[in-house]
Length: 376
Ligand SMILES: *Cc1c(COP(=O)(O)O)cnc(C)c1O
Image 1 (cartoon, rainbow, N blue to C red):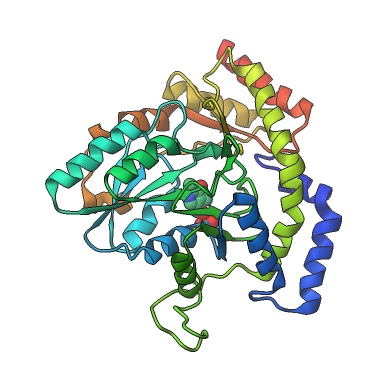
Image 2: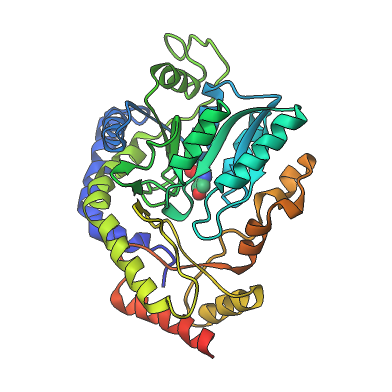
């Protein structure tokens, strides 16, 4: 069994993907070809934002956003303590300081009350200027943007939505990738909408920032890439990857999202009595980047993971280590006691195999093994 079966997805989509790739190889516009332009229009239209600027990966997408806002030395950026490394890495990469914030125990997303406490403390200390909140849509569920927007406005901060895992999710009818002042996503193969390599995109309604993002992603270009008006980077989405995404997007929207809702419901139906299953807030829709359960304690989690492995079932721990415990951030001296929820969850979470092409038999196999282990 595969954790996320991309081969099965390819078999389903093969004809369309092959022909889209073939077209690119024939017209040979491998960099910024027409598929890239078409994809940007399609994604902006989907998200309901004025602009979509594609780039090389989801990490660059975040960093480019911070660059467009000119965030740097002396600035504080608030980041959830429980996320993939990139969400905090980019803050240090632009020489600002990531200030980690504890999370909600049920949604895994940044906790509004902890955020306010940490912002007030940062303001009182007076060493750093609060500039932005990175809100991550972890495991596919959007963060609580109603609450976050009130806090951001009170402290005059930007919201950067990291929807690397959230693409396809929504709150009511409002789509992920439209909640931030700037929002980003990743097309890494295992993300909800993945390409066949690295890829990313940035979304905003702001014309000035969109123009800056388009400049920064091509060596800080002015009128052309040989007229360089600022220090940028080389971060473009390959035309081939845009072609793969154009082939995948309609099926993701029309079928895969529904299939994942159904599979998640089946998983939860089977497992709700034995383990802590995912909690989705009223009116929120997840894109199911992960199906993550909680076990009563670390030994049970680790035992279950070994038992699953023995039965040929892959699983993963997202995340083993909260951000504040990562060695790379050791210079910032975080107080380990400030993150009780993230610390606790890193010991007891387990993500199960999950993708839109899972069969009924596979779901029952996985849930059967989990039940057998828990019930003894
Ligand atoms: C995957 C991921 C990223 C980074 O995306 P890449 O395309 O791999 O650079 C950033 N943030 C989160 C939350 C992610 O899951």
